[in-house]
Image (cartoon, rainbow, N blue to C red; front, side):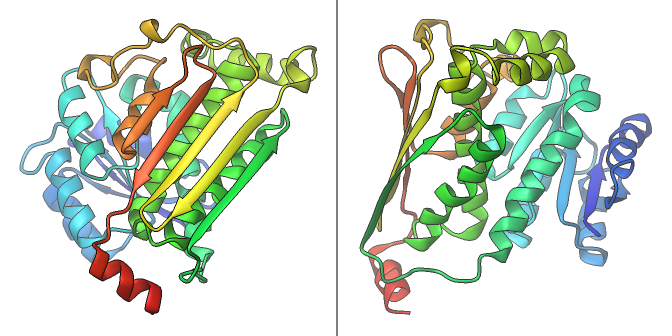
Amino acid sequence: MPTALVVDDLATDRRLAGGLLSREEGWSVIYACDGVEALEQLEAHVPDIVVTDMQMPEMDGLELVQEVCKRYPLIPIILMTAQGSEEIAVQALQLGAASYVPKRKLAQSLVETVERVHDALREQRTNTRILNRMAHLEYELVLDTDLSLVLAAVAHLREGVTDMRICDEAERLRVGIALEEALLNAFYHGNLEISSSLKEIDHEAYHELAKKRCAEEPYCHRKIFVNARFTHSQAEYTIRDQGPGFDLSTLPDPHDPANLERPWGRGVLLMRTFLDEVNYNGTGNEVRLVKRAELSPEQLEAAVLD
């Protein structure tokens, strides 16, 4: 049974987040009121995932992220952000957190985000074979307008970064989150032409419209084209949809903490935080993503010969 550790100094917020997760079949929840107690809980009961507030006494969310990433690098951390915590939340994402959910959207997005991160981690842990003698790997995927197919592609795309020893398993999870955001952007905003503003207004209507357009012209026949190339020095992904694109000048600055709560630009923030390069073409319907190797030449040679 998967376990989530929910960390928040406010009892009402702890109960809200824990209640949302515990109502899902198969999830158990343990609690902590600050970072210090969270570390004690981690020693006693190692959870599958940590969900934490950012602003807390004793040890805040940023300090907790640093300690968890150092002591338990394979446990993903999801941030609960509130107004006033945006700047440290961006720092926490840069230090190793896997994703975030605005507190005002916990009811709509927490369970979905936790399940997405946990599914990515579970698939990652079942991969026991590493293709460490491959010099390079390149392939292209052509994805139909099928959400399950798009999500399944993420698992295959992220395997290359460990197959080629570009990064460790903890960092591979973050690469997978970034790839999923890029593919979902191509699916919903690109091919289906659905604005994030609708999701902000009515979460259910957003997904109902997506389901409807998956069976309508011209959306249903559009494809997502993915080219992936891996060497021992970097992973490079190019993702192109067949939508009309968008005006790049309207994209909010993902490095500005003030934009953390905005519905549009969330995926770009995660992509630019977790990857080394994120570049769009002129029309906005193609993005190039690069993750560079973290291993030194000596470590890489030892890994390849392992």
